[in-house]
Amino acid sequence: MNNRKIILTGATGWLGKNAIYEYQKIYGYENLYNSVILIGSREREFELFKDKKPLHIYDLTKLNSIDSASSLLHLAFLTREKISNFGRERYVLECQKISKTVENFISRNPSIPIITISSGVASLLDKKNTIYDEYALLKKQEEIIWRKYSKNRLSLVFRLYAATGMFMPNPERFALGDFLLSSLAGNRLKIKSRKKVLRSYVHLGTLMNLCWRILHFPSEVGTGFFRYNACTDKIDILNLAKLISSNWDLPFPEEEIDYSLNPDDYTADSAEFIDLLSKFSLESPSLMSQIIETANFMNISN
Image (cartoon, rainbow, N blue to C red):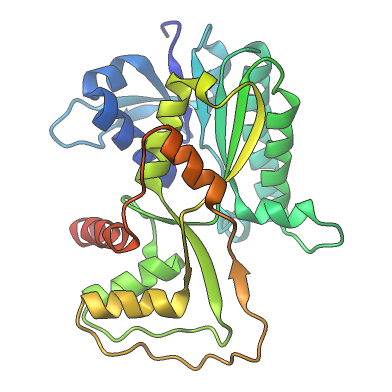
């Protein structure tokens, strides 16, 4: 592998596909092909664009054979549903293997800028006496690694809460995806929770665009450890369902919300993230535009 390349781990996942798409949109496909080393769970040829030559994906074990990388965008992680697929013990071991491989790499490259995507669930561990699962704990542990290796470099963590955008895998697992599957089928939307549900969304295309711009101009953020809540749009899930229903000419969503119950609130303050977008001359699309983009891709891919 050639020297001075940008490294992208998790290249074939939901975030990774958006990262690849945004890079080629900003810098062109040839620059993507020649300047970014793509890392995945196994080595293979990967075709994201039907009219372009396939991209080569390297196995994660090859990461530490790369010398003199210019920067790292780390998106590799096993999603939470893999806990039930793998079992808790294997899930933890596999995630720790990923984290250790990446830690070895960044320890050997002490000055390159590094960015990773964490999860909003890691914020639960900012508080004492809180309940958490393996996924939250492992995400928090990766944040600790990023802080540990933040001397003399940009070490940046984005906490992700909920997302919109292209390449959504298994959309039925997400409130937005489930609503869109129903709306595309012409079915009335149904709110399953008895509680009021609040979520903070980010457009993955905008987030990945920001990551690439930061890695090209890291001094614009600074040196040291930084952490941002990656979100721009806070919305009640019922209002999200109303928005989608209105756009697809569907009836008012079916719901039996008990407002006396404590809300399911998975949100965060977006002000600092929006300021960071502005610093790089970026602005998130409207939430409706994000929803339509997500739906258009699902309609094409399903």
